[in-house]
Length: 256
Image (cartoon, rainbow, N blue to C red; front, side, top):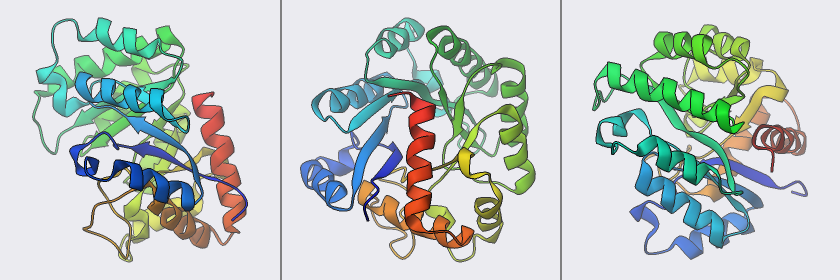
């Protein structure tokens, strides 16, 4: 394939890769993955994401406090995220949002961190990467109230066409991961067919959400090609055309 691939959401700093991180990156390059976006979810992981970006040219970093870690953040978390976001290889604030599935942090704490990081992103002129799990209505409500003028990505999009339309109406893009390859994910297939091409991204969310037929195994960036192939097939378009559009969309979103 002549056009390079991009994985817009990875967690390569996780200990799942401690024994073979270099080999994982080599496999990604061999599969045509030329750019990766490494995403933090708390201060330590955000620092680790930036450390990877500093030592690997194809990697860019996203820093922030994910809702499941909001209750663990130190009092100076905002100042620390701000400092990290000043690095030239940081391209977004995230992953941020709401998670009512795990409920590790009280909802009011999640909401406060979500809104404060949207404000921080606007102050820094950066897009946001959104984590939303079983919190669709409140996620949309917060974004409508507080995300004016922000660009953003709905990470590992999961939902129906109504939710997708609400995200697009806010001006956000949808990023598809391994579940779009699952044979029974028919609702998600319909969204992938319907979403405007200029609002579509792909990702692995590795080490999680490995695509079919590798579901249940540790995921890695090379497998973003399986996501790309599935989305291209669903849309009945050439893989080259899809990957070129995704590259342009990511470049426009993250501004590298």
